[in-house]
Amino acid sequence: MKKKFRIVALLLALTFALTACGGGKTNDKETGGAGGTTASTEGKFLRTNNTSEPGSLDPALAQGTHESWVLQHTFEGLMTYDEEGNVVPGAAEAEPEISEDGLNYTFKLKEGLKWSNGEPVTAKDFEFSWKRLLDPDLAADYAHQGYYLKNGEAFNKGKVAVDEVGVKAVDDLTLEVTLENPTPFFTELTAFYSLFPVSEKVVTENPDWAKDAKTHVSNGPFKLTTWEHRAEIIIEKNENYQNADAVKIDGIHFDILEDKNTEWQNYDSDQYDIIVTPQADVVAQKQAEGSEELVIGTDVAVYYYNVNNETKPFTNPKVRQALSMALDRKTLVENVSQSGEVPAEGVVPFGMKDENNKEYRDAVGNLITEDVEQAKTLFEEGLKEEGMTLDEFNAAKFNILYNTDDKHQKMAEAVQDMWNKNLGISIGLKNTEFQVKLNDEKAGNYDVSRAGWIGDYADPLTFLELWETEGSFNDANYANEEYDNLVQIAKTSNDAAERFEAMRKAEKIVVEDMAVIPIYFYTQPYMVKPNVKGIYKTLLNYPTMTFAEIE
Image (cartoon, rainbow, N blue to C red; front, side, top):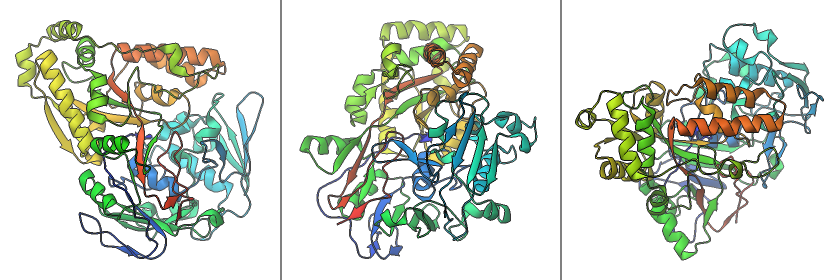
């Protein structure tokens, strides 16, 4: 979200529109006008919008695309992604050495790595960062990404001491890692922001280091220089970055605007050089025009609706199944989202490979059933089993929670209308800021909420682990012991056929129970001014601007 965005979260579909020409100015940058900011930067700065205020710019505490897009440009993990989306060494000198049993990894860091404050990056910083992610006192939502380390989960749950966690700096350049179980995607996972390094010295001396640009220190191609909360973020080229010579721009200026119309106006008037996930009507228009500024980026992400499994009558699987069956996903993607999305066939999007290096979805097939008549029957049965009538359901004034975004609003209105037309139910809409929505979901303070998830790594498990009973992002509060057991097999088995079969069974269970209601598999359209070159998008990340050039 994760990606995702998760949100990974997150992830997150947005809306914008664009026109042709201009942009990418290489002189003073001023945004103001239609809701932009007033700060200025001199030099070759890309200008864009981050859409939502980050909850944190500390890699261990981030949880969504509203944070990860900035982190993606200010930090670098042991591994990273090249232009083709391949996992390649970042801070690491090369691919890690891996023991035959798949449990022990040895990473060698590149020599001469520095933090943005000029101090050396060492293997000890990575050891510190990964143990910090697992520290129960930090309470990181993404702590589970450290559970692949030996005793990672045990330390996080207070059962062992920190020294027993399977990561150790042998010297300044050598990091030895011991895993709990063989984990085929672990090398790639080190490219995910939760496992980015932070400076042990900086964090130890100032626990609030990440809250202020003046004290923020990173190791990526850019460094944070301005963070005016709810207004703007500016990151500037980090001259201490290990590949600084390849960075041609002076920095990136992110506005923080939730209003997509204003965002589009700023792009249209050449105040922005790139915008991500433009408004549906703009994407449709630009596609029809054949605009060269529009890129329909591929994405491994699912857009879904949480249904609070602990709120009556959503506690009843028949009610959740009925809500899903009453939706016409083809109409939703063609007439509402309008960005080339694919109606969801489960919770794992297309793009993941199975044990035979074939498309994962092909062996699972379409798990989604749409049938209005069956939906009516199930809804009536489910309400009866919960001792509730249709009138009582409508009187309860349930709401669909969504964060501020024209596309999310239109989707919620369309879903609201389909449920009313097909099931006779009345359900309201509740709009909040993105971070407020995330907080409400964590607190269980919602009935139905829109959500999205971008994969953190290229394995179906990155989606299926979401709904483990104790999962950090199990905002639907789903619980199924058989499902949990299958996910554990997928996490721990060294037999590829066994773990993929477990994942296929797990997906069928979670969809049959309709723990959440999958709506569509994302694309990620974005628009770039024609005089800006070198921006690319990998499957799991927002567009990478690190090596952009402004002509």
